[in-house]
Length: 188
Image 1: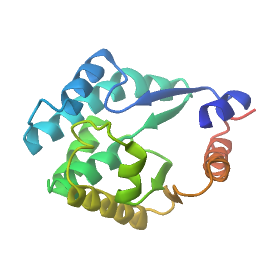
Image 2 (image 1 turned 180 degrees about the horizontal axis):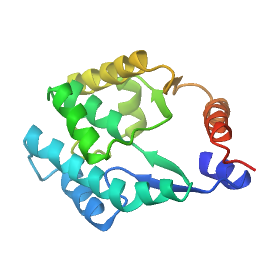
Image 3 (image 1 turned 90 degrees about the vertical axis):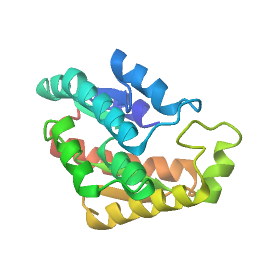
């Protein structure tokens, strides 16, 4: 819905996902999400950072240099929440790695769709990758981490209740997005 709205307003943008967005990033994504791999927390974290470095250097920085808006499905906050709060990796180390992997680039706006762990599991159903198949308590820590991050940076991280009606959520997301891109002078 957001992509349609960006198109409708003739915003010059790119859409990438993380991990992924490049050939190497997509290969790393397959490893990270494959249930047949048992990765150590450090390996998992460094693989996420490798994929992030690839997409930042090959896709995001070139797009920003041409004035494009970058819409990214997950980024630095995800690693803090999953590997930091959820997995127990040192948050300071993750922040340092994030800064290096992104060449110091961080999001201007993050939309956080909050949903209870129980409701998220019900929405997901039986399909789950290596990260999604972690236990309830892991996902509770991840959610708590995201909420804590949103509390630290409410100007950047916009917390929305994911149980709200879809069109209302879309309206709120577009409102935050439009305000940001208008401030950047990137809408018609």
